[in-house]
Image (cartoon, rainbow, N blue to C red; front, top):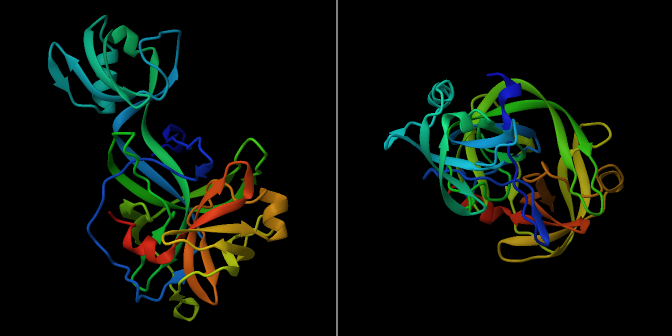
Length: 317
């Protein structure tokens, strides 16, 4: 797969909270990790490559206004006959001259019915894949994992995926937060497939690694968070090594708790919590108590964690 052809498609909520990753996927019924499982905290930043069922308009090549950037193609009909939405068929239509087409697309949370031609279609570049960055929270002894700490499904975006793969990354860099912009992690992908995710829910994603390293001596019990000192386990913005970074759990709620970054390196070099850190495990009293979930828009030293019980229960439904 040519990485340059893969499209990054990120949707950020413009509310008082910025969710670090968001998209839309189907679920599984498997529940490989239970509340009584001892888990090894991961903190590994991974790349999720997703083959989309519905193509997305990623660029206008000319000044054609029939479609808009980020339109999702739900249906294409030629002479009333439905065309299967894949790259081969769309490119075949593009080679024809002035064919009348009926398109259904999804735009700004609404379904649009548009009459266009094959000439119009040639004026747009479509994306058939997406890449996402996120962090694995924890792994069990069988290679089952949970991560990301929030839902990849959005009811506002009605598209599905055909296949997915999780890829290993190497060096992690940071685009730092500013007052009006949330920063993000930048990784170098090694291109090695290490597994797949099999389900998603409001607690994050679940899946299984093909290749993994599990060290029972590093495995921790699952705990219940309480207010006070805790540690966020993630790559250091300086040494790039996985290490504990001090935080404070300032408010405990049933499913999602409020946290504050204390660690000086995370504040200095990242400005707090950035996109891609969602799923970073949070350790308290030598137990896994949750995963990083979101950041407050105008104070990025303040964020939220998904409590580990909620992650386990709601990462696949």
